[in-house]
Length: 246
View 1 (tube, one colour):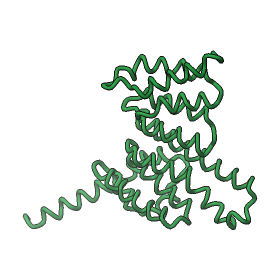
View 2 (cartoon, helix red, strand yellow):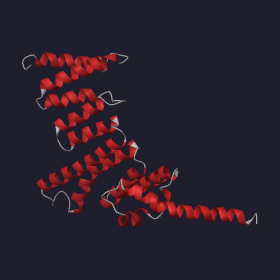
View 3 (cartoon, one colour):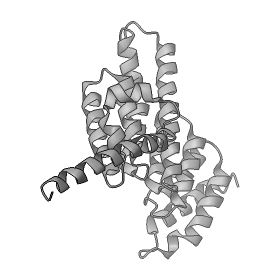
View 4 (cartoon, helix red, strand yellow):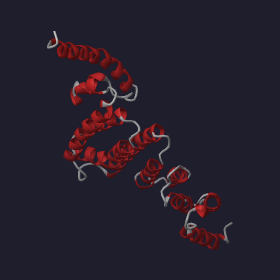
């Protein structure tokens, strides 16, 4: 009888796992609105359905991300790479690393893969190339927005979104808005406030740039241990240049 007890325990655990797997899948699928079970299972395998349980969740998220990274290195399977990266984000939605790198991969890389798939830069007209690249940049920015919401407004993710908006979409106003949110968030990067003001300034919104930067310096930056002297210098330069315009 004692010899049978371990087997009874294993059987009970197996049955419990089977009963919980469907419930766990339904919870995970809510975070993947564009990806259905039929598409996810062949790519990741049935192990995900069993692994989305308790402490196994982050482990499976890590393994899923590694598989997605392997596909990313091959640079020829956009759908599979994005699918796995999104799945990792869904499995561990508080991970800044997953959201940030998934968003950047979509925004920076996958448009170029699509152009190569269509025959390369020599064959695809430049206006089509630009349309493709901006489309993937917006797609990556949407993914970063999901991550910002899932992580409670992580300052680093906001700064990454600002970078995508500036470099990929060439939208200085949108970039400045993200940088402002980053500067006002907990753990703000040292450059967020300066870049927010700089992008507003470059867009011609000089008074707005100066007023916000000055208010933020008085409220936050001057209270830093070193008093943020570089930011104060930038403010004084803006004052001197802007005297003729304010």
